Amino acid sequence: MTDHHPKSGNEITLPWLNTMLTAQAPTSNATPAITGYRCEPIGETAGFLGDIVRVYLDWHAPGQGPGSIIAKFPTLRPANLATGKGLLAYERELRFYDAFSTHCPLQPPHFYGGADVSGQGDYLILIEDLMGARFVSQLDGLSISDAELAVRGLASMHAQYWNDPKLDEPNALYQFSDWAPIYEPSIASGWPLFEGDFSDLIPKAMHPMFGPGNQMAGPIFHYFSQNRPKTLLHGDARMENICFDPVTGKPRMYDWQLAAAGPGAYDLMYFFANSIEPAELFDVGPGLIKDYHAALVAGGVIDYPLADLMQDLQLSACLLFGFASMVGNFLAGGGETERSIVAATTPRYWGVCQLLKVDEIIHDLPARLAS
Image (cartoon, rainbow, N blue to C red; front, side, top):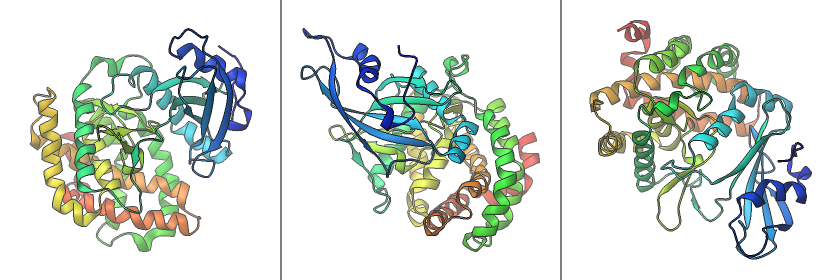
């Protein structure tokens, strides 16, 4: 394995690609070898935490390897790189691919390898190119049928890893409670910025919930880790991170930078808050919750009644306030794009709070967590 790794798509070389990929290529009569390549950026050259490049590959003989792969680099933008490292995003994703991706029911992209490009925890990963899958446009929104597929997919994954001892193995995954020391300082700095720039976008009934939600985010993370069943979490389960297999129609999830071991209810709540418009959520949310629970039971989860799921969903929804506050660090002081993101997401968050009746517990969280 090479000791020198590129830090961006511009630094990729043919010898490096051969070193990283030919060992995994299917066996054939000819020695696997990449003879040429071409790179193109994805998403206007960058994601928020990563710079993503599609690499087209020419092989010595047809079928020796994939026609293209995705190279996902840590971002070169210093402020965003600091955020990614603070969130442990690069290491989280590598840990997931190393330990859980092969048998995960949500069919994450095939993993071709990873490397620390700096020696300081800045991990590059090489993964399958999902170009042939069906993606959902944020402009079109998520259909109810797709939402049903995604919810059942989440339940299938959660059931498979429900209280799995592997979740506690050293270096397997970060725990849900590991978010507590990350969230707390980010909330402290982000909430004044979020409130200052976006206060007019926060519903009047929702605004008083930010204080107790922000204050209790850390204890909520610890409570779930210490008292509730755990499973494999995607951590960022929203429609932008879901695509659908063109043949089977099954959901596939990518972008595992927030993967953790924690409560399955969090993934479901977060999916609702970032994928379904409030008017639709009020109509289909209760049914989707029952479908999710039924899929857990079908997957072998016992001693987790629907009433427990509802309580866990309600409590996990209290983390939306801390999440939104933390986002103030990234979006405040921006332009129309940043404001449009908050304008689109805040009503969804408020819809989840209404569906799950967060107002019943948000002002009495210390007693709730102590019970």
